[in-house]
Image (cartoon, rainbow, N blue to C red; front, side, top):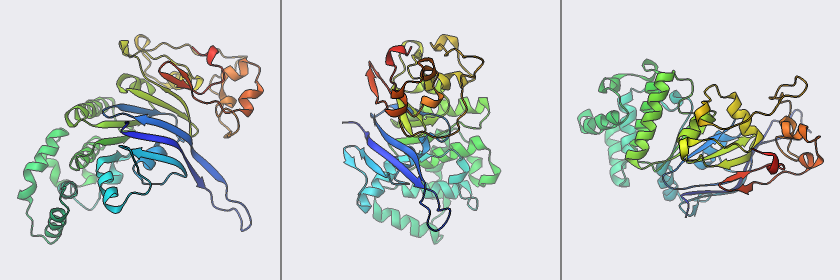
Length: 350
């Protein structure tokens, strides 16, 4: 049994009416996506902005409900959980958001915010309520929490001096580490990482990546890693989901030998071509030739829900004289070894 199983989930949002009698325009954020996550895996979700990656993460933590489909966690469907089961579920699956400061209270110092997380992680309900009451009434002293605070800071490589600081006094890298420490205090089993190293300097980025991989091993965590960086995910992930405009266009597993990248879908070609850190020793790919001076990255003017979601931007579609099947029929995820590729031209893919 898979730890997480997502079956045909979709998420729709509706714009405000332009006038009283107009229809509300439906925006498809996630369109019929299915995948599985095994215990202990790192599953990467990659795609450009607006492809539905973060929306999937929010549905997994029940921050927003899916419009269609089902999500199973450890064999249990999470849509209609009881209050107690929902509290337990929230402890077991946590999300690290892209903006680390969004989860920190600007009016509370780091010490207080970590103590709140420690109390939330207390398994016994009556003890947890007693600790909260004592803490907010001022009867609990800092000394009770010092050993646990120091342990959490040690795990994320931070100095205890940061406990007296407020969020505006710490850097982005430190804020991410504090966010990880707060989550570790709850003892989760699954972490959803939404661009965990975005907008960080290269040296800090590498330190955060090493820290996350170290925490995964020491705490036996399962990661769902959301990123724009396909090259990074090919080095660390066990399985990669490629998304475009809310659709899942490819699922593949990077090979073990030198983590070589075997690309099948045209959009995955584009993602690698856009990466500034492609190493020839670690990837095997051939870009599609440009035709008559055209760019191999076409402008994205509109969203097509009929036919292949990527056909208006696909060089294979142009090279094959724009066949009607791409316009009218949405491709399914075809099995090719350990890969699942949504393309009508499987025989032309390399």
